[in-house]
Image (cartoon, rainbow, N blue to C red; front, top):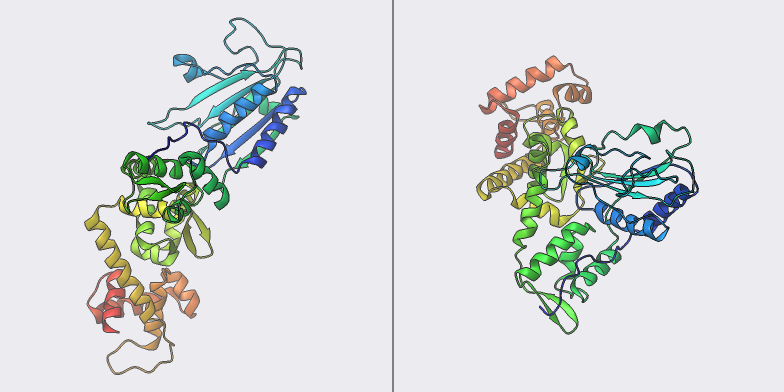
Length: 400
């Protein structure tokens, strides 16, 4: 391919975020102190935005940034006594401290960057702190800034790029706009910058794209190895329960009904709540009513493909059986039955089991006691010769 990926493409689609950062930095130059938290899922562009903030700080007169190393990096804390490398000097003005992903990860340790401001702007102890973190993993913030009642606090939540910005970034990276063959794959990244960068970098490395007639044409249907490796590394950051839920949800499809997900996990929706909260905090999915929707079709595909093929096939078969049972059990409770078959009430109960309801929830829906629900479930288990809800749904679907 006759193009070279840019080492750092222009920042796209973050104009409002940069405007707020400039406003906060101006506030610091006028003698105020502020904390700005930048939150977002891995790869959404937090580090890139902070890099732009450091460059903006230099434009506003802040001194060049220095990144602490070794022991200093591990024990660094914002302090007016520290400067950008000048031993023993105490700045008279405010300072900017950047904390990028304070929790850190095994493959990407946390780092801190201090950018002292010019002297003479205000008294010691004033400053601006920019901190980037993943949802639900914010570090404890330093006390001096927050102890000041006049401190200004702001929060930026980075979401996906708009489609137009995603395509502009793709053109920045490739040196040419995506052709019709490549555009749908670019759209499938869901506006996730790191996914897009890894996708296009990997395609170029594996000769999967080619410049033709001033456009970047896609030459393969396979996804790059580096992209799959990146997603696997990201999944390793999450808890085992979170990874399991994400993988099962990804196999089920781009949109997942919570009731189906609970049945696949052999539990109830209420029991899944803590793990569902963690899953949503990753930013990989968003809640839409009773469904979980993946932010990116490409990410969903990569998570599903991270599951070994035999396991993925078994999960797909199990999901198909559950969905068949759900369709087959949506009947009126008043439908007459032949002798020996489950009653209308029992079929209604099976339909609610297929929606992932607990015994208590079923009791509330059918105006029964939990004891009565349990009684009918036992009768259904005996009738079909099964011992679990999953097997009950499969048996009911086959009988129907």
